[in-house]
Every structure is written in structure tokens, then in C-alpha cells.
Length: 577
Image (tube, rainbow, N blue to C red; front, side, top):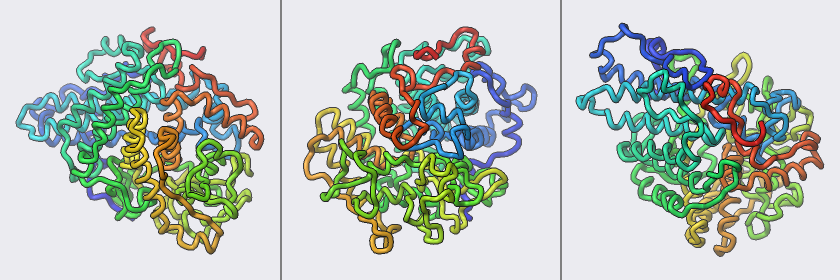
């Protein structure tokens, strides 16, 4: 079992004593995080060791504050997309996520909607405590600007996750606020565009001060900041500033140009970043593959480091398939997603009619990323022939209600020594890549296509398709032993560039919880999801009453508990919740 050398996620009990505050009911309770008066002298508070501990605590909360039902990977909320079914045993197994999956019956009082809000604002409170401590030091603290950049990166990341989920959020960007200031926060003080700019401002600072490399792999680098900046500006570009709708009213060229600026290849090569030779290397638990060159920033998980498995990745604990005793079988790849990987005789995807027929492994060509992303009946689970998947209840806890596909990117070989069993679910020491270089290429390709630079966009798409064609090491023998017909080729021209970029984004990032947010960003959620519901209803009864309502279901409602605690300063999202 691997042991991480860095200690970013191992922090002392003293830091917990200083910062622990219990659960928040509203972000206006942040002052509960204050360091108790009289415990530390001013000299002690300004001591670099104390500052480093409080910074480490801010990193650690992004591990300790999440759980299987509120994963910061956002898989629990990606069940709204056409990529994945909720899974589990029945509709009532995680019923609040079933409501999200069919866009019906969602209540502002649902525990999962409030829970994610609370957990992320807890993270932001820890980050702001660290920023306040750093600001209190003098210039003798040599790492002051760098540590401040790291914390502003984390603050931007927390706000980014919240904004994608809830759209209209209160921003906590002043670590010196008084209790009365928190009580007066509004979640509609800023327009949508202004909110994205606040997040970008934190990242602009981080980009200006962070180094090209970090000895501790869990700390962001300049390239990490650039990648998140590019993502923020890409979301910002698709303007949704009409307070009466969530429609895209403009695609801003200046923001798209910012995306191009922050995806310049030189930013990344300087830190040693680039594409892995094999796509699958990004999703392997072995130490030699963790923090590889494609990983721009990752959550660092580990075991055997003296924390009683506390730094193990439990956030994917519900995704282990039913065939593994105790597996809960959630977040199952949809048939729609599987069909998207089909390729024609030229090795290209069926972009407009990929779902006209279900993928048949015995007759259809497919992109190799299919078998590296989705576990399909007739093939070995996690590439281990001791676990051959089939269409029986063994491989579907729901007896086929949610199909028989299983996710591979988040799981590990049961015999490989990396699957950790707890009382209720499973964990592993495998890192979760938050930002990877393939996404940078796709963001750049999208911005280029939107600006009419189609040839450059397709060149970037083809880099990923060429890498996919080389990513077959784990699939050796799949053709002769299981009948797989692996075929993927680059595009030969630059026609339909934007369509091709969007399709490539789905294939490359499948089951990485980007799909639903992409559809909302593009303004395509209603059209795509309702078409998906209609097609799925023919085979899966859970979708017979499903319907996506535009200008409502794009974002979660503001939790009732937060509105009640806001002293009238929060406004509910549109949609008649």
C-alpha cells in the first residue's frame, strides 16, 4: 500500500482544536471558526510553523469535509446528465438523488442540497482562516505570497464548485468580516458575470505568485491556477446574466481569448505537464502513476501513513459494483454514454445519430476509451479475468433497473491490494485528479472553435484521438478473447469543429462529472436531457415521468435552511421552487 511522503493531509490535533467549529447552518456562522482568545500569543500566531499548520488544515478540509453522499468530485450531482444512472438498489435507495436524476420532486428542504452547501462553506471558512493568519505575518515570512496564492486558489476552487451547483451564491472573500457583516451577505449582490470575475480575481493572484513546480504534490502550481482560470473564463464566456432565465444570452469573445491565454502550452511544459502516453494511466492507483504529468492538481489520498486510513479516498465508496461483496453499485454509466463511443468504419464517432442503436460489442467498432471508462457485460471488470461481467443480478444490485454497466475510472482491481473495505463501504488510496491536461486542450479547442479558428481546434482534438489510439495496453487480447472491435482515428478535416469538440469532451471526460455542467454552460441542458429522457423511457421505467424544466433545473435551489438563516438577504433561484 502506498504511503504519501508529503504531509499536506496529515495535520495535528492542535490545529483541529484551534479551528473546529462543528456544522454550519449558514455561512454567516463563519466566526465560529475564530481562534479562541488567550490560547496563543501574537508571536505564536505569527510563527511560520503555526501558519504552515493552519494552511495544511485548509488543504485537509477538502478531504475531511466530503463523504460518499457529498463528494466534491460532484458524481452525486452528475446523475442529472445523460452520462450516468443513479444506480443503487431501487429509486428509493438515495431517493433525493433519484429526484435529481429525473428532475422531479426536488425540494428546497432535501438534505443533500443543504449538505453540499454546508460542506463547501466549511471548506471556505477554513481557507479564510488561513488567509487571515497569513495576512497577519510580516515580510520575514518568506513564503507569504506563495502560501497566500495557494489559499486564494483553494478559495476560488470552493466558490467554483458552489457556483456551478447553485449559481447565485454569497461570496466570502473578506477574511476580516465581523459577525454583522456575515449577517448582511447577499447571494445576489453580484451578477453572474461579476461572480465569475470574483473567482477569477483570486486565481489571477494565485497565477502571479505560484511556482512552476511544488515539492508537495498536493499544492497547486502556476499551471494549476492557469487551468482553473481557463475553466472559470470558459464558464464566464457563456453569459447567463438575465435574472429571469438561465439562458445563454451571449458568448463573450474577450473571455474566450482569456481561455486561450491561460491554455498556452508553454505555461504547462514549463512545469513538466503534458498528456500521458496512455489515457488509462490517469486512473491507476499504483504509486508510479499517481501525480503523473497529466495531473495538474489532484486530491492526495493515501493509506498506512499513521492516520488509520483517514486519508483514504472514501468519496467513491458507493461506486463499487454489486459483484464485489458489499458493493453499493451507484453511478452506473448509461447506455446512452456507451453508444456515444461507437465509431464508423473510419474510426470516427456518430456525432448526430450515435444513439440510433445500442452498442453491440460483437458487431460495432468502438473507441478504446469505452473499455477504459465503462465495465460492460462480456468483458473483465478492472481488466481482471477473475471478474467477468455479465447481465445477471450479480452485476446489477437493481436487477437490471439501472442496467449492467459499471464505472471503471473510479474503481480499482479487487485483487490489486488497493481496495480498502470499511464497515459500510469501500475506499482506495487512488488520487482524484481535479484538473488534468486533457481538459486544458479541450477548453482551448472549444474557445478556438467559438472564435472561428476551426483548424487549430481540430488539431487539438486529434491529439486526444491519437492518444486514444495508443491507449490499448490494458486491452491486450480484447479483440481475440472477447471480440472487441477497437477503432479510433483522427479527423481528416475541420468541418463541424464545435460539434466535434463537444463530442470529444464527452468521450474524453466521461464519468468525470463534467457532462451536466457542460450542458448547462452551453445552454443545451433542456434539449439534450429531455431527448435523453424520451429515449430512455422506452427501456427504463424510472424515466417515464422525467422532465427537465428550463430556467429551473439547470441549478439547485438555494437550501431552505440557508434562506431561513440569512435574515432575508438570500433570494431563491428562479423556477418556482
